[in-house]
Each structure stands twice: as C-alpha cells, then as structure tokens.
Amino acid sequence: MRPSFGRAAVAFDAKKPLERQVRDVLENFEDHVAKLPEVMSGFLMSGGSDYLLRAAVRDLTHYRDFLNSLTIVEGVAHIQSSFALKAFVNKPSLMM
Image 1 (cartoon, rainbow, N blue to C red):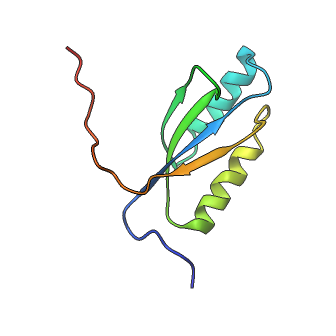
Image 2 (image 1 turned 90 degrees about the horizontal axis):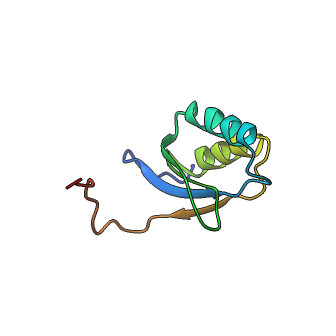
C-alpha cells in the first residue's frame, strides 16, 4: 500500500538555484516547468534561490516522479523541498 496524501492537493515549495542566470537557461527552465501539470504557481526569486515553485502531488511516489522531471532540466543545480504541515492563514492578495 502506497503512502497517500488523500484527495486534497498537498502544496510544497521547491527552490531551484540555477548554475548561472542566463536568459536562455531561465527561459528554458520556465518553459519546461510551466508545462508540468503538478505546478500550481512559479516565481522568479531574489536571494539564495532562483525559483520558488508551488506544486500539488498525490503521494510520495508522485512527488519522487515530479522531482525526477525537474532534475532533467538544463541548469538545475540543487532542489530543496519543504512541505506545509499546517495552513493557518491563506488570503488572496489585495491590491490597494
């Protein structure tokens, strides 16, 4: 029996530092990631990691497969993932 996250989508953040920030490498990464059905949102970041992705996976097997699909992208040097243990607030942004 596989460990399961159930029917609800589980969101996690995966930070992707790239080997170098060159336009073609960035565009290639963004194009590849945008086509993955697991990716709910993606952000180009400042600071230590180049990208922050929010993705939904069914279970740990699906998570491993998703990570494998990221490791084949040219320029990905490191993947760091975090899982949300509890949501205590989740508001849409309000532009004023």
